[in-house]
Image (tube, rainbow, N blue to C red; front, top):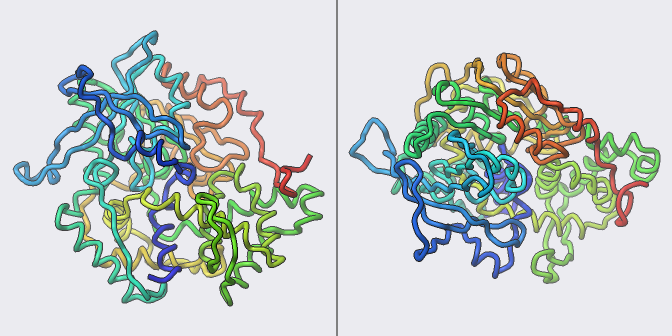
Amino acid sequence: MSRKIRFILAMVVAIAFIGYQAWRKHQPPAATAVASAQTAHDETAPQRKLGQLNFKPCTLPGAAGRDGLPAQCTTLSVPENRAQADGRRIDLRIAWIPVSEDGDAHDDPVFLIAGGPGQSAVDSYAMLAPVFQGVLNQRDVILVDQRGTGGSNKLACDAADEGASARDTTAMLRLATTCIDALSKRADLRQYGTTEAVADLDAVRSAIGAKQINLYGVSYGTRVAQQYAMRHPQQTRSIVLDSVVPNSLHLSNIFARNLDDALALQFGVCTKDAQCKAKFGDPRSELGSVLDTLRKAPPQVGYRDPLSGEQKTEALSADEVAGLVRMFAYMPAIASILPLQIHEAAQGRYAGLKALTSMLHTQMKDQMAMGMQLSVVCGEDADQAPAAVQDDSGTVLGNDMGRFMTQACTQWPKGKVPADFHNALTTPVPALVLEGQFDPVTPPRYGEEVAKSLPNGRLLVLNGQGHNVIGAGCMPRLFAKFIETADAKSLDARCLDVLSPTPSFIDYNGWTP
């Protein structure tokens, strides 16, 4: 498979609606053994019961090489197709983090809904665990791997196709067909969309005996949370929508323009700083020049692999650099190194960029379930997207990702969605909507659109932040307070005023003074 195809596929499964944190999840062998993708059961420990479900002690994957997190784990069997109750069944992987021993337990737990589409809630929890400490003083946290992800019949594709070209329509169709053929042996791909996931969540709610639940959704997970609140308002106590995807949004080729808009803001931090501007000029213009050079003749670059330490020599493509810029833009504090790295590349020194792209590709591999992602996007958005797709050839990402999605969705089996699926959520359920000022995929205007139809909702835009902002500044404390009170409008959010954009690196010693 060509380098370009390989990278586009990695991007497709990684960037639709995910937080940037996944790339940091590298774990040395010892930690990986403890925090494997499968929860580790202690058969000697007693079972605990929550509602109708029996749980066993387990260890959730740790973050950044740290030890795994103790939890309680079980599965719940549900019909793959609820219209065929006697047909194939799916075991949903569930983890329960009980309220703190000295906490004041309530009977309405908090459900975490992961992004993607295609990310595992169980496997990604460790990155958000510190944020939930305040919540755990009052409520249990429940993690459900959405069907098609993680431990719930994960729909991952092996899309290797040597010699394919990114603009080769036949190759794109062949990749999709190969994935369909492989996954269809164990899954009806029409049954892995948001609507089915919402029914699964309510089945879990019922099984654990909770009359109401609180929902925290991040990125694509906000679509699931909104659909749940729409279908089950009496069972929804509150919702937190972090980096929100409006119900009305069709996931066509929106990503390229949103990224360029965010880069204008993020690189503007440099151009507004006299020292940074004097050294780097206009980082966006310089990035365009670097990408043009790489497209004409990808250079062979000698670099040290940041994970293995091995010295390597490989080509550096424009698509790799565009993907790196995209993923770094999710976290502006990390993206602050981009003007320096881009300037280095413009001088013909590519080793830094190549090391970073290599690390990103390794870390993103297998983080997303591409088959589940295509079931969601193709079933819910492909046929609903506007007929006229804008030309993004002048952007950092260009048209390739949109082209791949379009070609894949011509083949992919599509499920049905309710007629009101893309209607705005209008509900009195208390809602806290969070956006980052520099978000490259779900910009603040998405939050404004969602919040305006929520009478008991409130939008907070976090200055200088990117995607998935629940952990920024005092936000964890505000999150816990909202879950406690279910009153977004009474929150004293002045503590967020201290947040500001991260200055750009002017050299390898760090930011400007």
